[in-house]
Amino acid sequence: MLGARSTAQWREHLAFEERERKLRYDRDRMKDHRAVLKILIGTRARYERARSEAAVTAIKARLPETAEAVRRRIDRIDHWRVNSNLLADYDAMLNELAEAYPAARIKFIAGDRAPLQALRAELDRRQKAIDKWLEEAAESEDE
Picture 1 (tube, rainbow, N blue to C red):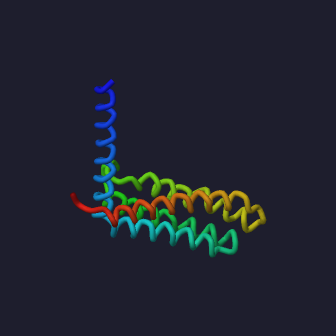
Picture 2: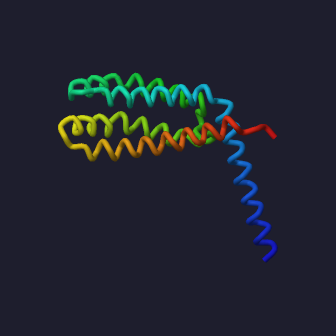
Picture 3: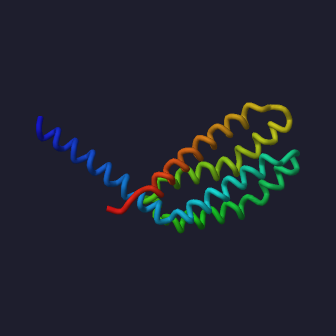
């Protein structure tokens, strides 16, 4: 029984150390994280300002170059994709902005509000989680 408790404590300690390591890793790459977030938020804002299907389509047509800029930044952050907690959220947001968001925005313009409201909630949730992690990373200290 003591051995099992000791093993559990050790696993807890390792999980804590890994979390701290990732916080420091992301803190050291804060400039790139802020740049990725700025691009993603800006793209979403452009979709939100679009008032017609043609405007949404034009924004979507420019998205491949935006996506490439985001992917370059992500590679600068962590080309192995194992050190940062945020890359999965960035990928998900980018994928939603590439396909689901423009389609939902067009439906919204046509009067069907539900798909866009669901995507807005999902992107807001992801952005809030990213902001919280980056805030923790900024406050983290070296040991």
